[in-house]
Image 1: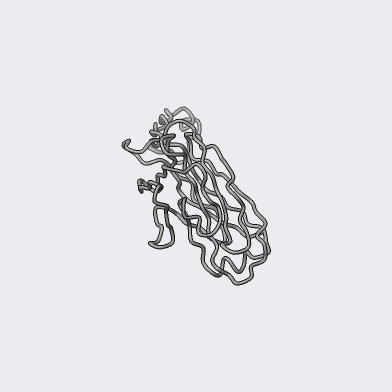
Image 2: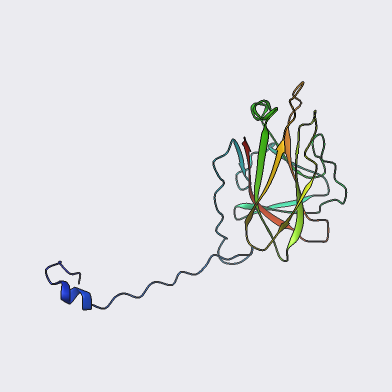
Length: 188
């Protein structure tokens, strides 16, 4: 029975309910509960891989990709991937023409939320203009918890506008896999 406020002394001595124990979300695919994935930040462009639109994401022939519980699992990276053009040897996000035009001559911040599926592994990120240069591959280490990994790059001014791309190069084949929940791009 709840107190009415008239007898505060009696209410203060009433037994307090014990806090409920809430199990933590599972951290690995295949367990009973999906992991809690933080939502992407507000950005100029966002891809949530659980909702990726057909054609917006492309992958190289060596890259393995599978969707699970709100993220994509990537593996099969190559030793010397090109970071230019369409970044065909990676998991590549095709950026809209409007984003390319707005990013021209400005700095972009590319962030992915990723984790290793078992032991920590390296993966790479790159941004390509497919015309006037690219960031080159920047290496990151994914641990076993979802963490944000960020690349910043000054985009040269475009000439003809041939399409910009954001690439994720997963761990080398046989070295492990990563889960990627989302990719966001902000123009500074």
